[in-house]
Length: 127
Image 1: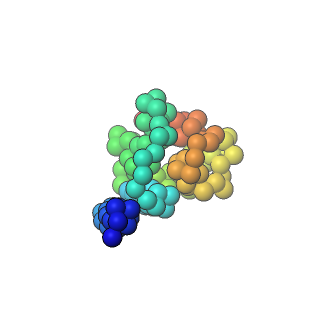
Image 2: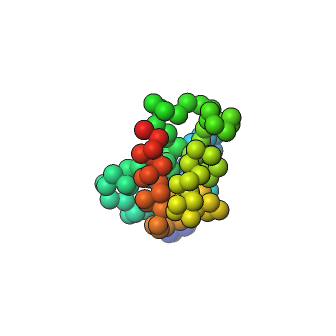
Image 3: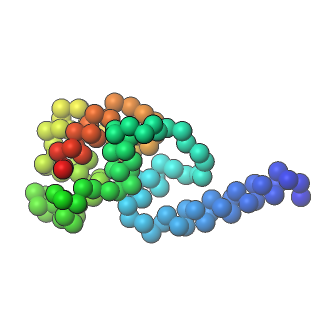
């Protein structure tokens, strides 16, 4: 076995362990759908907008306003619910024409796009 074959086996093993580690973490559901392999991604600056996007991607919601259940919709609060379904934020979705947009596109896991301002407005309205 040469070095390349050994490296491929090690990479495959590490990738399997990495995926198993994420499997039961509910907050990583959107991340798991988009990120299939371990690799370095150079997508971020350290701007406030990027910090907000990373919080949403990580499933982090501001705690001071949002509890476990959405008081308006009577369902469990989650990033997916807030960005796709919640009645409270429907006008913001309409403003940015994102009513029928896939959650991965909104979270920009498939590449940077127009949703920075949308995520920032949603997040700031949650504070």
